Length: 451
Image (cartoon, rainbow, N blue to C red; front, side, top):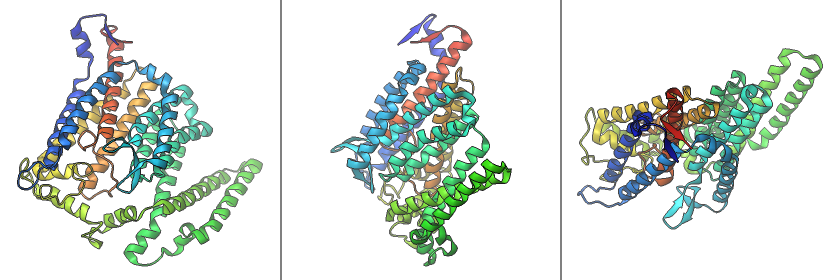
């Protein structure tokens, strides 16, 4: 609990009001536009989602307060248990979860349910931060770097099995940011980035090229056609093995880079085959219509076309709150979740979009300041992971609404309708506020004491 060794005002002054103000402002904007999304063209309110959003927001503020005042070192002690429990929930979700929009990503009964993959983000951030703080500079060693990668890969694989590839992608910037801050070697990070990008490329290339150009991807079939790529994988594995033997015997540097390049191709080809086998038709079409939405304007391309239309229709100052047409005529599917920013763009225009963008900039900027000046490594890494999570969500979701990013189905923090996403965001802000309080306590030598 929170104990004060000084005046109550000293404790209050220790809170990061810029962080909290940006969060509350985003929460209010979210409630307003979730309400707007549920109003029909004749002014009738056809959805009570905004009431649920208020309830989740109020309870989320309670979670924020709990995580803000509980010593973050206590979280460190319990992270392994929370992490394992989260993996079990993700496994159950992949096996028996409720299908929603083509993915088994929900656990619950009827309308009551949670999305474990949202909470798994925080659990993964905490366990990775605990590991990085324990090994110190050991992250520069390849085995320990790979173990850190494994901690993140475990939930990613379980989420991809649902399949929910959009949520799985969020873990990549979390891992890269946290290990970069921890001092990982650039070549190790570049290896992960290259394998990841090439895996996605090889996984979606055959379907996308066939949909757009009407033919197979030519020479790329060596890495994408299952009947051929298995032999390619054997050849690449042989190259890596022989290069490893050569490096061990002769110690030549070029053998190392042969191992490096061969491993990139081997892992990317294997991963691409895995993605291709798990991709659903709607996921393939999301990538196709990102390149050209007019291939299927009344089908898969409908969402992005209507979203871009809504954002463009808002102009500089917008049509006015509750005066938009795309949402109130129900042209925007999933308008209270994935495309909430489209409604903001139409009703508040460019100015409204900039206002939301500035709120996220304030939230993320304060998060950077907080984790950069944290008093211990665990807090630093936790803060870095949370900032990376918020940044990726905001960047991808708003980019998706404007047509400059493919549709991934990830929510806009604090604005999109949904309890799991909102609570996860509130917990993240609570942890940032916690780190800020600990920093302030150390700077002043008094004030708030966290117990």
